[in-house]
Image (cartoon, rainbow, N blue to C red):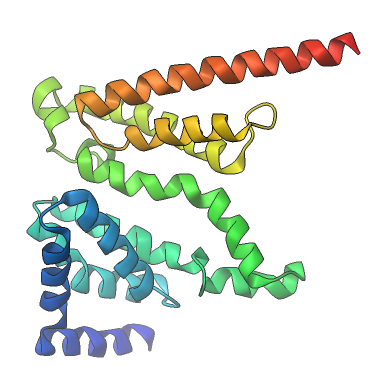
Length: 233
């Protein structure tokens, strides 16, 4: 039934031109800037995917929001995965967060509070689609400057390692823990390092790896000092 109703909605969107208008609006508002267009598409997909089962979710987000990314030169499979990914994340994104409100009676807790904690746990996952856009090799797709310069296999290995590193940094920043509680400056440094690792540009990657080393050294020294203090007691 849900798929049948979604077919009606997609047909209405096609006949009225809503899909094309939304894609055109995203491209126009972004001014051709890819990161701005990605953020706008992310918000649109979270709204469009609210309360929908998986298959109808994909049908709606790919048919209405997907064309915006195709217009900016994003590969087909990567663009579809991007919109589908954020359509699914609508289930834990406040203020709707249907999955969190479904869990609220079981946990005997506020649905919004559960959604807030869910966002913390899932925060690292929000960066993966952006990394796939800049480096399609993350989804085992050809294309992207990295694959063109260093070859497909090298690009896959590099982006997977970088993605794991960025996920760890993002998680440590949001949760505030890495072996021991992190200070706010340490969390800010981890967040900056994770953010600069998203784009596949030599300058941003260089800055990101430098910040990662700085954060790792700082966190290790703090952890060692805490253990020495605990041992002295």
